[in-house]
Image (cartoon, rainbow, N blue to C red; front, top):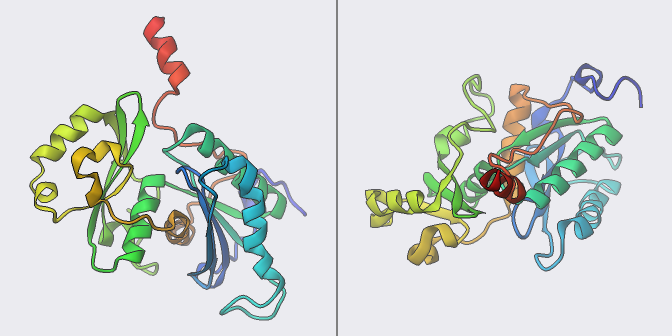
Amino acid sequence: MTGNPTDMDSFATNLDVKHSLQLAIETTSRAGSVALFSNDCPVRSVSLDPTRRSAATITTVIESVISDLRGPVSGSRGSEQRIQLISIAAGPGSFTGLRIGVTTAKTLSYALHVRLVAVDSLAAIAAAQFDANPSIDEILVALDAYRGQVFEGRFQRATLLPPIDSDLSGWSALPDDVRVRPMAEFQGDLNRDVSFQSGTLSIAGDAKPFGALADRRMEPACDAIGVGLLGLLAAAKGDFVSPMELVPRYLKASSAEEKAAETG
C-alpha cells in the first residue's frame, strides 16, 4: 500500500462506478446485511443472523461474500477481482450496530486502500424497497428510536434514485429531511395523513411507530442492496469520505446521554 491512507487523493481516482466491484454493508437493523455489486448490479447478498450480535457475524459474512472474487464474478473480466468501492449505512439506527458497521467499513477502506461512501440508513431501506417493488413511487420509512422517539424519512423514487448519468449536484445519500422526533407527534401526523389512511402511501421499517396499521408494512428487503444503489450514486457524484473522518450518523443522543441531561 502506498500513499497516506488519511489523504483521499492517494486513493484510486480513476474509479469507473458503473464497472466497479462494490461491497455494501448495513448493520443498523436487527438483521444486518452485506451485498456485493459488480457492474452496478447486485450479484450476491447475505443477511446476518438476527439472533446473534453483528460483531460476531459481520466478518464471517463479508468473507463469504468476497470469496466470490476468487473466481469469475458475473459480468467481470478474468478471475483476478478486487473490491474498488465500499459503501456503508452510517445511520441513524442502533447505536451498537452503527459502531460495528462503520468501524468495519473504515477498517476495510483503510486496509484495502479503496474509496468509501456513506449513505443514510432510512434512505437505504427505501432504496431497497424501490428496487424490489418497481410499482412503488413513494415510501415512508420509520424506525423505533426508543425512549418515545422515532426516526422518520419520506422518499420519492425519482428523487432518491435518479439515473446515474443525470445531474447529481442537488442529490445526497444523506438527505437532510431524515429526522428524529417524538413518536406521539409522528403518529398524530399519520392519523391526519390522507395518503397513509387511504393506503396509497407505502410504509416500511419497525412495527411500533405505525401502531395498529403496522401489518401494512412492506415485506423486508435486503437493505444492503439499497446501500449499494445509493453508494453507486454517491460515488458517481464524488461524495467520498476518508475512513479516518467517517463517524456514525446518530441524529440523537444516546440513552445514557439523555438520562444525564435529564438529571443534570
